[in-house]
Image (tube, rainbow, N blue to C red):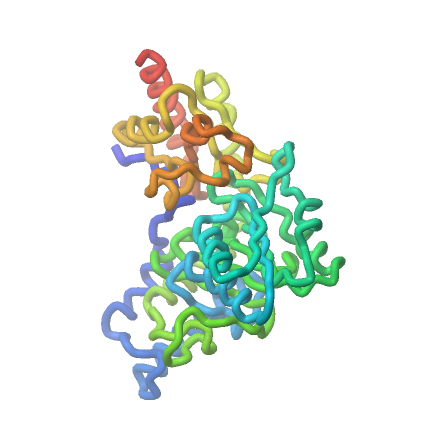
Length: 382
């Protein structure tokens, strides 16, 4: 029997559309997009088609899509590029549940002498906008806030933050990590009010190792890589043509099917919540407004054994889940996200993450629930 995969927030299987789009550029259609001969021009046209597909998925200008090696590089370029592009003294604010790559970028800026403030959640789990308001100073260069928490599924009020910055007359650059939003939520760069938006291909059925930073307009960003000036001078290096083409196809598919995916994810979430209710020792962990959750991500706090033990017991029975962020779990470190959410050290080690896709079936969810119940009973006996 095929394993039940409930870790789509970590990575997704390659979509058929992406695979088919990529194949020619893994074979006979190879070429360097910077070359001016026929092969190079064909590769450039393919990259530009993909650029337009990604732009349409978020309502952006194709000229403002910068392809990167993934979400990590896109987030680094958005945060580091904006902060370093502004000269003089500076301050940076980062959200309380940011991905490790944003936190690490902020830490790098701190070592460079910038003042970094880390945001907080209120007691009800919502973003503390008053604390952000108090933290803003004229020198604030960057405000970085993820749209969807990759560990908890919480949707943060990015548009409210953008409105706050405008009301304060702040010149801060608003960077948004939208990696867990594309294809799962309505996504519009203009409506969010963000200056830059980070995306990742492998979260929406595209290949691993490709991402994009989308700019709202022409911006003064300091490149992380220097060289031949590809990607508008913001990301030098020969483009990964096959990967980019796959990303374009996956982004187009995700945008086209987003409404149906959102409905399906909501139905699966309802099924999961109902099925988990009678299972002893397993508690859904919903931080913030229950109506403002990305429905494909559901965190659970499990009793007794640490989440990693639960994960391996489930994996051995053919149910694949996550333990917090995949990046964080690999380091065996406690996530600052859980601390921001008010969990103590023991509770933070007891968080599993179930993440579904529109392709997940109700039958798979039922089997997964039965397996979770089985593991809960076994571990309680131990």
